[in-house]
Amino acid sequence: MLYYDRIGLLSPSGRTGAGYRLYTGEHLKRLERIRHFREAGLTLAEIRAVLVSGGKPKTKLLEKRMRETAESIVGLKNQQRLLAGMLRHAASGKRPASVDKNLWVEMLRAAGMSQAAMHRWHSEFERRAPEGHNEFLLSLGIPADEVAKIRRLSRGGPQSG
Image (cartoon, rainbow, N blue to C red; front, side):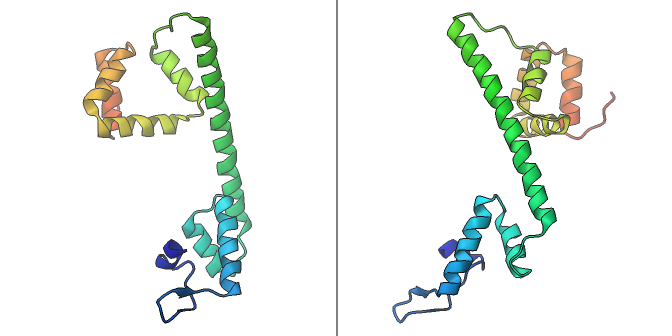
């Protein structure tokens, strides 16, 4: 409640002589609504907008959150399938096959990553650890000229060259 007070989402009606915050039954109802919206996955900014606009979320916001939740579920199910396959492979006692570019891309797609998400992943890897990114790409058996191209694209550079 202190955090919600600090960000202006749930301010007390006053303070006691000892400095304690005072909340009314209406505050409790507002807190319950905030908690309810948080459980539904709405951000604090979205909750603030809902409460300011009368307390009833717009259909468009709920549909957006429903799509995001569905995408998360698909991604989690893909990750679960990938992990189950890895566990089966580990239980078989066989040495894992080496990972090449095609297998890596296939695993990322199985985990629910779109082409745009893969680009963001490469961009973030390049930004945080450029040499590690270079070594990782080379370890996948990608030729040096293609690695240079991927890294250039990751930095937002031109595709050719």
